[in-house]
Structures are given as structure tokens and as C-alpha cells.
Image (cartoon, rainbow, N blue to C red; front, side, top):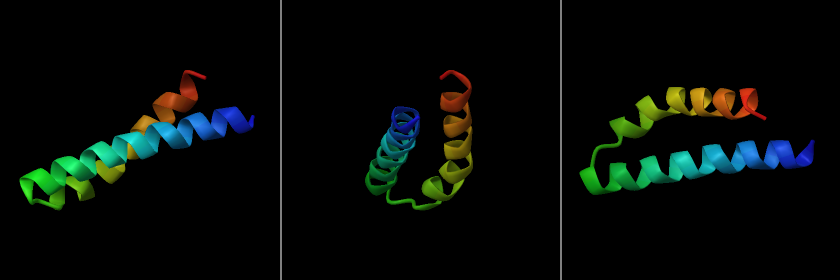
Length: 50
């Protein structure tokens, strides 16, 4: 159970970190705001395939 939670948290962390660096390069933080919703989709996708 703990592995499941850690893998899901790692997937969302990796996704949001990549989006953060893309936003830094583009100098547009609006990308991060949009990505929060998609982060929930990533979480649910990871949870449904466990």
C-alpha cells in the first residue's frame, strides 16, 4: 500500500517538476496553473493502472 502511494506521488511530482521547468523556460506561469488540473488526471491514471 505504501509503495502504491509513493509511486503515485512520484509520478505527480515528476510531472509537475517538468511543467515547472517548462514554465521557467517560457517565462509563463500560466502553464503551471493549467497543469494542476491535468495533474489530477495523471494521479487518477496512475491509480487506475496499479
